[in-house]
Length: 102
Image (cartoon, rainbow, N blue to C red):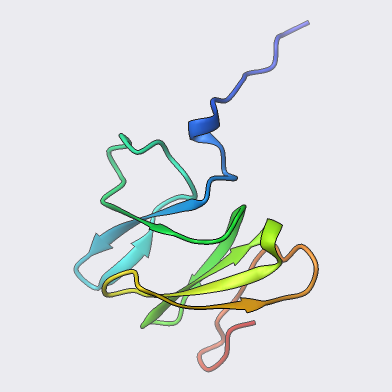
């Protein structure tokens, strides 16, 4: 029987920090929570607990916080937290339809 791989707490997707790569067109999410020494992490911004889904509306980055039952709105240009909004129970993802965040 094969042993299951173990993951360190630093590699957990349940981190409170969302790394964001800053590209020429604005901040674009790279992945949900690599260690601080990860080569892809350019800047980190605090969001809620258990960040899962995220989407950009072109100006802001919206991050779904599973454990807090909220969604965080970050300004892409500098990562400033613009607001945290309540959702239903255990939100997993979000979508942008060109006009609204769902």
